[in-house]
Image 1 (cartoon, rainbow, N blue to C red):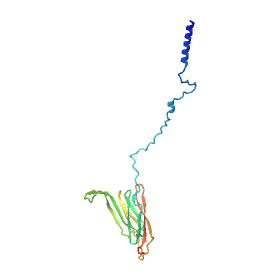
Image 2: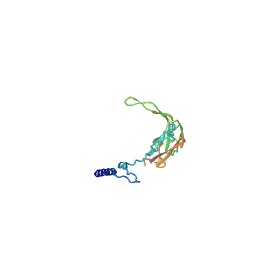
Image 3: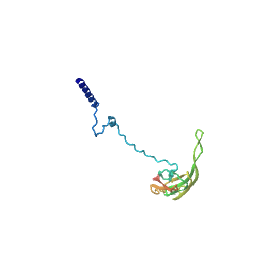
Image 4: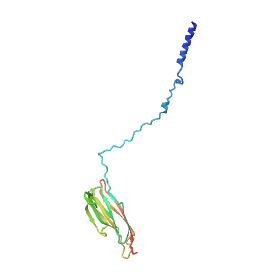
Length: 223
């Protein structure tokens, strides 16, 4: 009887010992401490907060672009090079105003520069041109609307106005022709420069462009 009781007590003690043990390799957290983060949580990269992308300005089809208030012209300056006595050189200034109206060329003269022609052309129209192979090729040609011609030596300093319409083109011919006295003494300085100013109306305000012109005089070849 005593042996049976001893065996029962030994079995109960063994069961209590097994139930009270925690799994191998694990420890219960102490009271008041947060559980440790797992390895998968600690190794995850920190993702930045998404910032709002810039919002483009919405296109408003009801707003028209600002009108062009200045003309298109070329060249920016007139270079006549160096000339000998009796020689002359011509340069052509081309300008397309932004709108119709009165366009005025302010010509300062200068004694060796001359305004010889002022032309106004209308927008190109369809036409044809014969090629070397005998075929007619469509070609857009400017239409001459007006022309004011002055001989060399006859233009005077002043204002030369012209009436243009939208899309017209203006062409101004300037001639540089230095002269010398019969004895071969150069008339005027060896170099001459002027500034030609063209003024016209624009959609918002009047415009003005200035084109410098420069030429040199070598004198007489007999010197």
